[in-house]
Image (cartoon, rainbow, N blue to C red; front, side, top):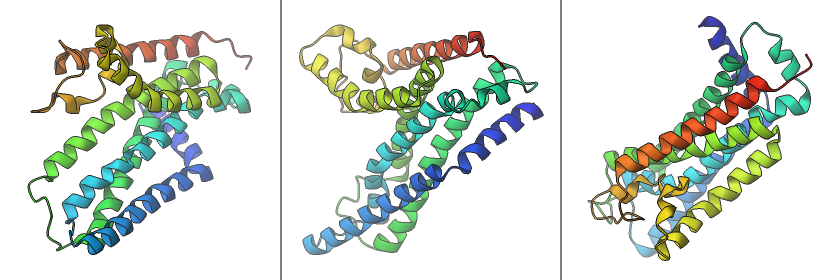
Length: 259
C-alpha cells in the first residue's frame, strides 16, 4: 500500500511541477471573478441583486472549464510518458504495471476533485465579497442541496469524460489525439444525442452522452428517450466505465517496451 501511495504522490509531484497546472488554477479563479464582476454590474443596472447562493449556483457554469482541464491532464498523463521516453524509468520500478496505471488514473480523478473544489471555494469567496447580504430575485430557486446536486451530477459526467480521455491516451499513446478527440466529443456528443432525440432514434439511449445528464430524472423533466430510467443510465455508465478501463489496462500491460 505504501508503494502505491508513493506512486500517486510521485504523479502529483510531476503534475505540480509543470506550469500548466498553475495556469489552469488561475484561469478558473479569474473566470469566477470576472463572472462575479459582470453579474454584479449587470444587477446594479437592472436593480435585481443576486444573493450568495444565487451566484454560487450560477458559477457552476464554469464547471466546463474544470472538465476541459481534467481532460487535458487525463489525455496527457500516460501518453507523455511515451513521448518523453520516461516510461522506461517508470517501469523499472518494483510496482507492477496495473498499479502504475491505476495510480495515474486516481491522480487525474483527484485533480478533477481539486479543480471542482477550487471553483466552489472561489465562487463562495467572491460570492461573499460581491453578493453577501443582498436579497435574491428568486429566493426559492437556489439552495445548498441543489448546488451540491449540481456538482455531484457534473462530477459523474466529468469522470466519464476523463476516463475516455485516459483510455485514448493509453491505447494510442498520443496526447493530442486523446485531448482533441475528447474535447471534440465533449462539445458535439450532446448535440448528436439531441438530434437523435429529435428524430426519435431509439438506439440513441445507449450512447454515453445520453446517460451522463442525470437532471433529466428530476421531477418535472422529460427523459431523452422512452424507456430510460435512472437505473438504466447508471448501468450504461458502469458498462462504459468498465470497457474504458479494460481497453486501457489490456493495452498498457501487453505493450512491449524496451526498458
